[in-house]
Image 1 (cartoon, rainbow, N blue to C red):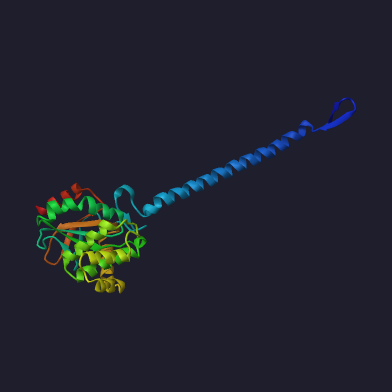
Image 2: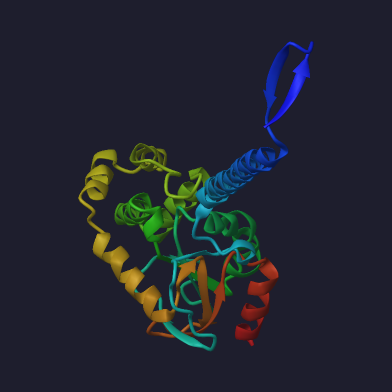
Length: 269
């Protein structure tokens, strides 16, 4: 080592220059590793925040398409599809020339959007005028259960105490009150709706709790899958037939009124 003389009587050892680079290199490596680790942790945190803030809204939505989908579901047909109205509730004139089948989920935010924004226009121009009848069929998605299925059962329980009009009154109230995404309503809220509509509360509660119409809901699900409905809302529009089986054009998502209008006008010809 080089020796630095101080006051001629004291010698202090000073590290040689050859030793300094190795220490600096070690410090530099540590600094680089810390920077890399911080970057990785920051990226992971950002990704988690994105998933929490966006995925929680509906981790299974198709963005601008306005449709809530089942993950990895097969694509539906693009041409005419044969679909049945089954024995489900009819809104409008049962002898209307055109049938609109709505496969939907009471917990689906896009279905709620359709209910609020587009259905009123459809009612005014086509349903209330007797040109189109609408048939709501259940397609509760698994990530919205158990409430989506419970709500579908509840609507059928309401119909049991009245008729198709009662069904759609209950249908309307659920869409008005839900906040969607699987936790929009509770059983207590369903009971409140039943009471507000003048239904027998005990009979209604017993019907819902026993899942009396679960098989009916599952039948709708099976028919939806058969028709290629892989998300909600999915609509099928076609000319009405005596047996209720229609050759329909499929329309997917919370589409604007104009999209429905174009198809309906063609079917009315």
